[in-house]
Image (cartoon, rainbow, N blue to C red; front, top):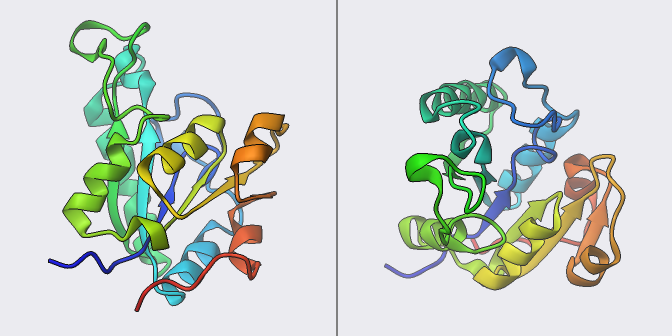
Length: 190
């Protein structure tokens, strides 16, 4: 099948929700204002939404994969209620040095490595050159570049921006809503 779909790859913590470190409970999950409208705008522009998130809290034993999946199902339902369909959610439960048991792995899915993006490319026939990655950390931007994503943007989410990120990112915005309202990102392939 021809790769003809463009996607917006979103990091989770710090892009979709407030980053309170190792969020896995529904009552601790706070959507960042404007996230639903931003995603509706991306969909109107022809993109599908795919979430890619490192979840080392699983590797560290802070919560289980079932805890993560329960929260993810709830989150996706909240998006659906707001008219946003999340195409897929990819997560990395590993950590090469802090992981426990089977999760102590130097994998290719933990950002800044591009494994989650490449898996989505294959499974959803994504045209990476026409796609966008939006993250709040250097590792997010590096993963997008390593995968060949055409446009990689940083949202500050209240964090200071280090020089290396400003040199690598295609643009820096206060939040996802601000980026979605800008005219800098391209229209997706129809």
